[in-house]
Image (cartoon, rainbow, N blue to C red; front, side, top):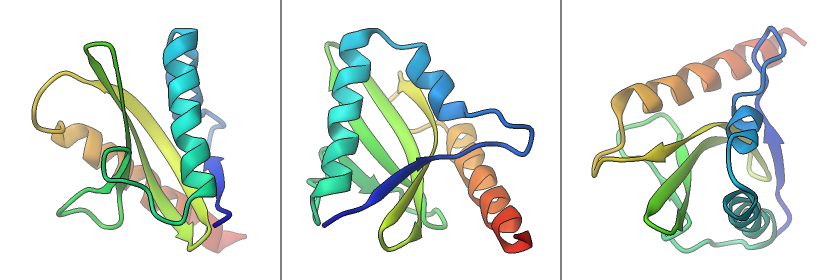
Length: 118
């Protein structure tokens, strides 16, 4: 499998997932990048690392645990082989915060709307 991973950019040029990466320590960022490399290279990823969020319109999460923290990066498929990363956060509760899911869905809708204009 050969997927392409792309960082979502807002209309004003901000890149939320890059900002998230920039806020992390080197070791955590390295493990997240390793997980994204799996996403690019493997046809099927274990749900430990990649999972569709139930009740969403095509939103997935890349999941990484490092130490006692759990890191999440939301994404969606543009095509079967293109994955768009929207943003990330450190998960502190058992349940994924609704506002984080809504943010990913908003970014997805924005991406699709702007792509149709081109």
